[in-house]
Amino acid sequence: MGDNSENRVSAKVSDWLIERLAQGELDPATAQTVRARMAAELGGEEAVQARLAALAGDDRATLQRLPATLVAPKIRLRAEQDAPAPRQPAPGRRLVWLSPVAVGAMALLVYVGTKGPRAGTADQTALEETNTKGATHLLAFRAPSLAGTKVEQLGAGAAVRPHDLLQLAYTAGEARFGMVLSVDGGGGVTQHLPAAPGTAAPLSAAGAVRLPTSYELDASPGFERFFLVTSAQPFSTEVVMAAAQALAKSPAAAQKRALALPGQLSQESLLLKKVTP
Amino acid sequence: MAIDVEGFYMRYGPMVLRRCRKLLRSEAQAEDAMQDVFVQLLRHEEALEAQTPSALLLRIATNTCLNRLRTTRRRPETPDDDLLLRIAASGGDVEERTVARGLLGRLFGTEPERGPSSQAIAVMHLVDGMTLEEVATESGLSVSGVRKRLRTLRARLETIDARAVEGA
Image (cartoon, one colour):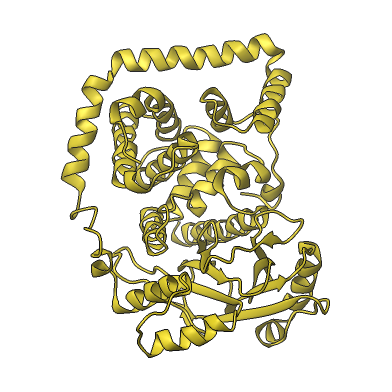
């Protein structure tokens, strides 16, 4: 894995994409691009069709050798044997397998996601105040263990470890467009929302909204600080990324200072402290 | 969605088998791993979306094979195979990450995320030869997120290499 590995670009179309093309599950634009690249690589459209036909032929050969009538029962049997516990809790019992903290987190999410009055605990009362103010918030949760019984919401300054798996979420409040990114103690900047550079993502006002993917912390030292940048209007993610990269150059500043952003952009951050196992 | 095992197997089984065969280089292990992939699919059937099962199945297959490679001793046959084995050895927690993602998905009442591990991303980019953009699209991450995971994995590999040198 050399230094230039991150720029590795292969002229050969990957088997992965060819399989997806053969299944007809690529979006039209990507499918067209993949076909064109295959044609260039293989020497024409006929060769592309021959490649796809070969896959179809291999499909038939496999199904003849390993027919569904033989394999499917084995899969079902293995699934039954491997099931550690009843997989689908009855309605209303989902919280049983979550820790109390996770239950609190779930209550938070359910509450923020609804508008109606709700008899509540102290935590819920606090949330009610937050909600009625239409606040914009960045939330982080952690699923730290294989045991699968702990999900915890992380507050400011919470201790985290390399390879912890985090799920970020937001409540939009009055904001309509947003961006989530993080800076770390190694000077790295990662954009989490939207997935690609360009314009900030439209935010959903439907309570707490999770980001599309979870996030595994790396081994960079010291801290990971997440930012939620929002506005009532669309804005360029490049401006925010540039500010984040400037801030990330100084680990001390990156833990405390705000991003240097245009006045119409609001920001909120959540600092997590990295500890070495 | 409820999964019609026969139907899913007939449509996607050969594709999954090819993926497992490519990574494991053993027909017997590939057939066994293929069944594991569908078992995992069944475990999460109630939360699956039907739009692009092939991407999901290829990701599960990659994670499944990496877990098997991690616990299997075999001699690399090619430079890419050597890289694949090193990537597998760099992550002892591929399944744990997957389970944890599923847990987070359930917390939010959404599909248990079956996203690729950092190791799987490295395989997609370095072994399969997919571009960063293609990996990002197929894995639902940003390009910068893919880059970061690759940097993390490279650091792990360098640590493993250093330990190997020390132990030699």
